[in-house]
Amino acid sequence: MANNPLPKPYFPIPPNEYDPAYFREVVKMFSVFLQQAGNPSKITADGLNLKPFGAAGVQTFSNNASAISGGLLPGDVYAGNSGDLRVVISPDVIVANTGVQGIMSVGNATVSTP
Image (cartoon, rainbow, N blue to C red; front, top):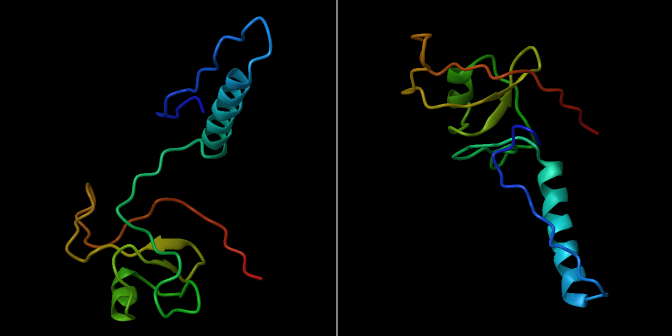
């Protein structure tokens, strides 16, 4: 949580004697803490579809253009030929510093299916 931009929950100062309202506040703040600890990184997205409408699951395509030709929309997820996950982006998008349209790599992910 060190790089998490969310505000840290502050626990109230305990009273001298048992107070039900204080106990409820502690439980509430602890719940907030656990939610933040369970998701330590920031996610910013306009949309992400891990199971495109009508698809049986994540489909495999060789590149962004073939994914769009295959019916996927920007924000849909597909697997590349090497098994990496990719997100379809609009062909009108030019990724900064590459000059290449519609191609972007973010990292690696492992996908396992039952």
